[in-house]
Image (cartoon, rainbow, N blue to C red):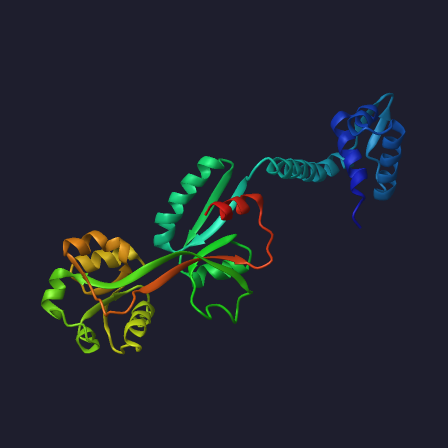
Length: 298
């Protein structure tokens, strides 16, 4: 059975000062209340904790062992309560955030740097990876926030409901180097012409390519020759520039090359496919002051 915490607190204070009078002063209670609390604790534990010698209390071996148990808890409690009180003065503490590799390495880190200039007591732990890895960690409470590419139905069967809001919408283009275009396409952008090319994608199963073809041609093309699979926008971009084949990248990353003519993008006449980076939180989860400040500023 757990002992009353107030008695343990009295014991802890007596042990520190080796004096009932000093403990009473520290706790703002009477000396007789201190003595009564100690007596009840000794009765409850069926153990003598102090030897009374004149005005001094000498701890027994049992008191020493009990103090070793109680002291870390009391110190931790005092520190935690002080932290909660200090938090009222402004956001502080650790924020655990998940994000895609490219977005986290570029956009998120830049924002964190700006955020910490305003809130230096907030620290960050960032996990980079695929949504399929990050969303279960969010559901398990291991992450506070996740930035992710959210597609309809992702995780709906196995994960609790999320609150999802779009924070960035970027146009995606299917692009290749000017040299590759001249050698392989020569301006012909029919599905049949594209099907004979080499492609680069981010993961097995060609989800990015399938989404692009369904958006522009209302169908996916089976049997595409994917010569590079890598979960990195920068790697795909380098492969495109190196003439490796056709790959999908955010349009803003190749704006200069498109204008200069060193990179060519497939234009079908339809609006470009939009990739939405969404901020994902657990529904109903109370946000800490640090999390609120982050959400308000992002």
